[in-house]
Image (tube, rainbow, N blue to C red; front, side, top):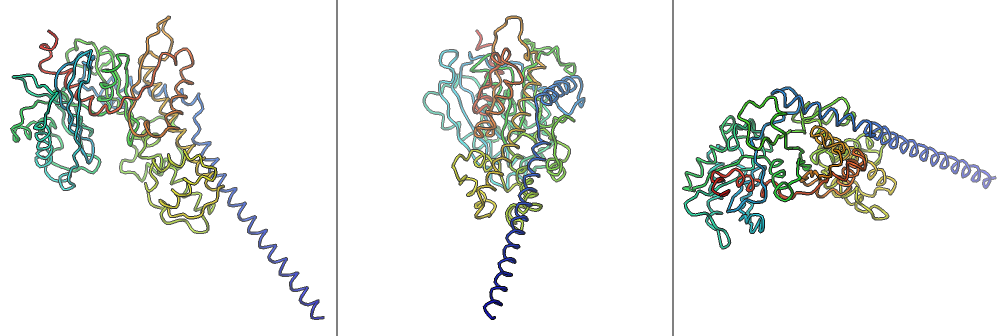
Length: 496
C-alpha cells in the first residue's frame, strides 16, 4: 500500500516538473519571440530601399540650393570657406600646419618639392592640452599652443629650407564652429568637445593665435584658416586633380565640395580668378521627412545635448551608432529578458557601448562569436550569453551600420547631383573623385564596403565607373599646410 502511495506522489511530482519545464520553455520561447519581434520591427523602420535613398539624395540637393541662395535658407549652412585656390601639386617650399580639433593638437611641417618631389619631407608632433586650459582664458590656451609651435620650429632640421627673408607660413585647421570672414580670419561661434573659454567666443581665432605667436617672438603668419573637411579636400586635390568633394565619416560627419561661384547667389564679394569656391556644407545638420527615423533615434535626439540638431549625423556617424545599438538592446533586455530576468545595470548607461565595440562584434567571424561574448562581458558585465543571443546582437549591429552606410551614400549622391555628375556626360570619360577620411570610414570595414556598393547601385554601372571614392588620409594636417602654400602671400614669387 505504501509503495502505491509513493508511486502516486512521484508521478504527480514528475507531472509538476514537466509542467514547469513546459511553462519555462513557453516563457522562454515567448521571450525569444518578443526579442525577435523588436529586432524585426526595428529593421523594418530602418529600411533604406533604393527609392527611399533617391528621395534622400534629392532632398539633399534641394537643401544645398536653398543654403547657397541665402543665409539661413536651409538646415544646411553651406558656409563659404574663402578657399578659391586648391593645391595643384606645383607648390614648393616649407609650410607649417596646426591642427586643433579636440583635447590634443598637432603641429606639422612639410617641405614641398613641386610636381616632381611633391611632399619631399614631413614631420609632426602631437601635444595634449592640460584640462585646466580648456576652460581657462583665451590667452592661456593660445600661449600654450604658440609655445609648442615655437619649440617645434626651433627643431627644424636638415632637409627643411625656409626661404631667406620670408616669414614662415602656417595653415590652421580649427575644427570648431567658426564664422569665416576671409581665407585667414574667422570668429568663434561657440566651443564644443569639452572646451568652454568665454573670452574667445566672438573673437577672431587667427588674431588670438597671431598675438600669442608675437608674444613668443615667433615670426609666422597664418595664411589659411580651414576645417578638417576642407583640409581633406585640399589633400585629395593635391594628389589627384579630379577631386571634387570630401566627406569625413568619423566621430562626427561633414562634407565639402567645389562649387562654381556663379552658382552661389549669396556670394556678394569679388569673383575669384579661379571662378570656384569651396563650400563647407555642415551636412551633419541635414534633415528630411524621408530619413528613416525610429523611436530609438527620436529618444536619442531628445536626450542629447543638441535636440533637433545634427539629425543626419545622429544616424550615420561614429559618435552615435553604438549608442543606437545599446538602446535597442536595452528594450530587448527590458521587454524580452534577453539577458535574464534583470536588466544588466551597465546597459542603462548612455554611450557605454562605443562604435569600435560595435564594429568588433559586427566583424566577429568565429563560429561561437567569442568576440561578441567577450565584449558583452567586458563592457556590459553580461557573462555567459548563448550563441542564439550573440547572433541577434550581430544582426542588430548589421541593421544599424547598414542604414548609416546607405544614407551616407545617398548624401554623396546628393552632392554629385548638385554638380551634374550623376549622369553620363556625352561620351565624356572624366573621372570625378570623392576624397574620404575619418575613423568610421577607415576602420569599420562593413560600413565602408556597404557605403561604396550602395553608391555604385545608386549611380548605375555607366556613371559609377566615372566616380571614384578614395581614402585621403590626414587631410586635417597635410591639407592645411597645402592650403597655406596655395594661399601664400608670396604666391606670385612662386609662379615666376
